Image (tube, rainbow, N blue to C red; front, side):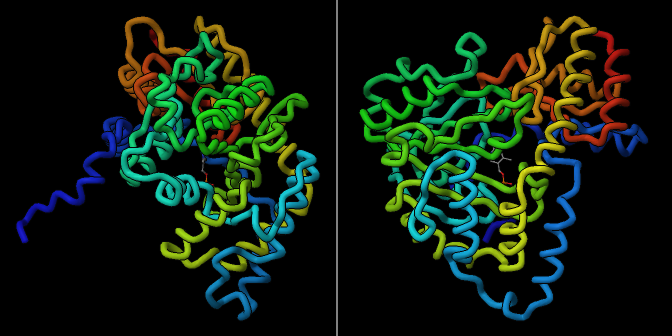
Length: 390
Ligand SMILES: *Cc1c(COP(=O)(O)O)cnc(C)c1O
C-alpha cells in the first residue's frame, strides 16, 4: 500500500467542509490568547433536566440494561412516543409498526437514502439546508437536487420550479420546519402542497422536525402528520437533542408509513445494535414528563433572540426575532461574502458565527448565529458586536 491513501470515491464526492477555514482561524485565535465566544453551533447550553439524568443514573446501574438492546427500541419507548404524538398533534401512530427509535435523528437522516433510494435516483434537498440531506444521498449513490430557499419565498422551496424530469426521477424530498439554518416556519398551505406534490410524483416526503418544540410566543409548529394524506407518503424525524437539551445522548426517532419505517429498521439491523437501554429509559422519562422545562428553555431563547435582534438592528440590520428555533439568520453587510464576514467578526471582536455558504451555495450572502451560549457569554458577545466596524 502506498503511503498516502485517498479513501473511497464516495467520500471524495462529499462537498468540501466549508467551515474548516473558520475552524482553523478559531483555533489560531485561541492559541493567541483571544477569548473567542462561539455562537457557531446549535447545541443547547442549558443542561438536561435533572429528572432525566436521575433515571439514567438509576437504570445504568441495573444489569438488565447492560446487554444488547432490541434493534427496534423498548416497547415502552415506542408507546411513549405514540402517546406524545397523539397529545401533541392529535395523530395516532402504531407503536409496533410506525415508530423506530434512532441514535439521534442524524442516524435516521443519514441512513434513510440507503434504505429507500437507488443509485441514479434524485433526492430533493433544500439549499441552504442541514448538510446531511445531501451527504446521505451521495453516500447512497443518489443524485441530490437543490431546492433553493430564498427570502422572497419565505425560505420555502418553490415546488413548481422543480423540472418535471427531475420530479419524475425523485424518490425522496427533504423538508425541515422549523428550519435550520433560516429559522423559517412552514404554514399548513405549504405543507399541503408538498404532500400533494409527493403524492403526484411518488416521492417519499421526509420531514426533519428536531425544532418542533422550540417555538415562541404560543406558536406551535405543525407536525407532518397533521396534514391529511401525509402518512401515506411520509416520514418524520424527531430528536430529543433540542427539545430536552440532550444532544450528547444520541436519541431520536423516525415515524410514519410502516413499510418505510420497516425498511429503515432492516437497514439499521446491519449497521448498529440499538440504543443503550438506560438512555431509552431516560428518553421515556423525558417524553412522559411534560413540557414545562422545554417551555422554560424556550423563554430563555426568546429573551436571547430579542437581545440579538436589538443589537443587530442598532447596527443597521432590520431583523425580527424568529418564531422558532434557536437560530438567527441574517444577511451579511454589503461588501462581504459570508466567509469574509465571519472572518471579519472573528478578527475584530472574537465572536464566532457561521457563514451561510456552509449550508449550501444559496446560503451565500447570509450568516447564522445560535443563541445557545450562556446568557453572560451572549451578552458579552453582543457588547462586542456593538463595537464592530463594518
Ligand atoms: C440538530 C439537528 C438534527 C440532528 O439532531 P440529532 O442530535 O442527531 O438528533 C437534525 N436536523 C437538523 C436540521 C438539526 O439542526
